[in-house]
Image (cartoon, rainbow, N blue to C red):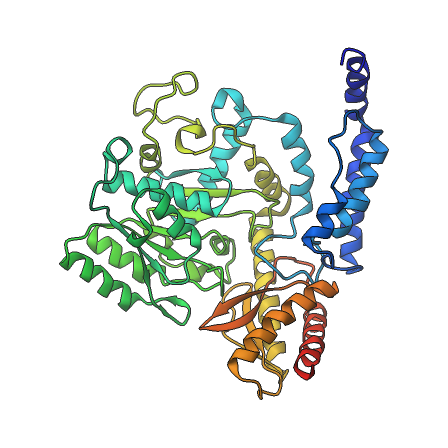
Length: 485
């Protein structure tokens, strides 16, 4: 090892110079250029076993020239990764990230500031607190509001419900939830993060009560009836969770109506706006969030409709003291200041201690593109989804299951409508698999209303109407082959 040390130290210094940085950046630039033209496959035809064999190799005992490492990235990694920046990539809710935010990632890594406490990230803490304030203002939260960055919507919802538990059961951190834990009510199409949080908080997943939908949104009348039943049986309600931009259909619950029910009963309302809260940037779509100011907590993922690179999530609360109460711990080796004093330290209100400065890329993106630019991109993604819906209406072999409220659309290949429901379910499942393996495009699938359906999520500003038509052409051709076979 001693003889290796001088060489490794020399390599380290070489790798810190511009030529080394440019070698990595060139791969990303070439990737952007190729996908801009819509060239090449959207994903890989290789299965998991084939890809695993590519990397089945011994642990390297010694380093290799940087040029060889970079070439392996280009050939072995990039070539068979999902190309989210390709205009016919319309799969999951993962963005084709904004370039300025992408380039900021290298600076975040180079600075390596841990955002748990102000002294470890003096400027980063100020940036994060400012972005949280901007987002609170957009949500209509008052001057006592606050929040923190998270790894994503799952952590944000978990943190919010932990704060709700502290409000409902102040001694739960020390004593547990007891024999009769409270319940959490949520829409039947809520993200799985809600039930996961309820289980992890020790309430038991039976305490997560699903409310039926009306038009893919939580039925407010059914919610009111469920709340009345809880009152009649003497069961405490810890929180109600509404969804703003559901995973399946992108639908928005009626936040104003749900919020009024919660306010009348003094209940905690959490809004899972991981996907849809970014509509607050849009003058066209922000009305879908009417009533959001009634929420006590809000999950919001900039790495979705604000098009940030993974990861960048945020949890906001109307009263920051609620978030501070969620974590009833002391850590004098990290956190300083008097009891009850407002602290800039984000570690006090976060699961994470080692925290990336993800706020910086959001700050850079807002500086570069502005709030208006982010809103315009949101509008564009939604408009493209509506164009997809219109195109389906012109094609007999397809049917849409809903009109898009955001950038998500579920639809179904029905062919000549001669196949029974069971065979259509199997066909649509196989159709998605074959189409994705072809490289022509990339979509997802889900079950909606008891039917296997195809699902697109428009997350790339480069996607146009012609890309929509090409995806539908490929799906129609593959569907016809399956139906005839």
